[in-house]
Length: 224
Length: 289
Ligand code: FES
Ligand SMILES: [Fe+2]
Figure (tube, rainbow over the protein chains, first blue to last red):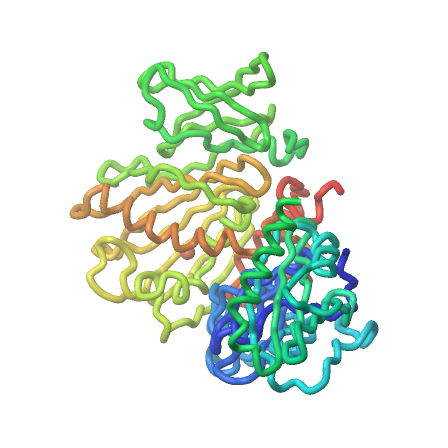
């Protein structure tokens, strides 16, 4: 699968992106900085400072701003540059702006798409946002298409059929009380990440078991 | 990568070893501009350098200066710069070895020219987080020598050198001597009438793979050579983390792809100069598809 640029892709579990942190993520070969202010939602930006190209995933967070580590240029949540420390009295021109991607947090997963327009499919809809628990993220040394195929045929135990809720996300019902959502995240042609969340009364107690089954799935794919 | 065909890059002298790196009678295999070379130390002060292609060797010119062994692949190379401080009798001359950096040579030169990062990357040594301002300075293209200079630079430094005992307003003059070499003159803590001279000569092995050599001619009667080298290397290692995480590693010359500000006047002048000389090696827009 080559990720369509208009496709929403789950790129991290929301609870893994700590407050006041900036983190590197690769999506379809593109380097992204996934960051969160001291409060507030996760943002997804190009991992490149407009000034001299430093990775913004090395940046540090102050309040709801991201500061580049190299020369301290400070960016607001919309990407606009607010301060250039080399010239403390200068108001940065509006043209200095980090490039941002749309991001949404739903079902405990952070979703983004590389094409910022409103083209393409909507986010997967599995009902209300509440009640989803993180299971785990894991990284597979394989392209996304064999991973998706293996996921469709996987055995997470006592399960109903696997349905695709988007081109790159699958839902599995395990008994009446446990639903699992797995987002498939193509990093590049050789690496794929899976981000899994679960919902239902048994979600918390089954977490470790589900994580182990997903690890087994990864091992099977990597052996194939 | 294959050997570059860029005549501008080929016609530069670049370091390929530091003097003393190879024992007499010994040799070293390395690379410049994608070309494998063989550096032999044939005597105390003599070296032989050859380009190696399979089993054939082509002898290359050699010069030993500024603690480095230089060679070139070109027939009409731009001469090595004159740096008078290396001839002053009371100077501490040291080479600091070399450090590998995975980026294009130009990113290294720009980092060396850049005062705006001192407070953030060399915090409490070359800069302080509460004094980040870069005051206006001037840049010049000195046509007689075809070099880029930045003059009247000043920056507040908490511990400007090994010899410093407190903060000072340091005066700098920067000098870009070739696409792959740059130096600075920085006022001496103990004697305001003199300048320390610190150079960076870059050995571009491939477009985004370099070795940096940092010869210095320092006025400091107290510190040992070991101390001077440790200081310089600790600074350089802080820069290396940055240099290897700038994207793209190749230098963009299109003025809209990265957005400079006044503090970057020297980098702007350097890029303009590179563009005018039509250098292609390691330049983003000059990549053959
Ligand atoms: S590269 Fe980000 S502030 Fe300079
Ligand atoms: Fe530096």
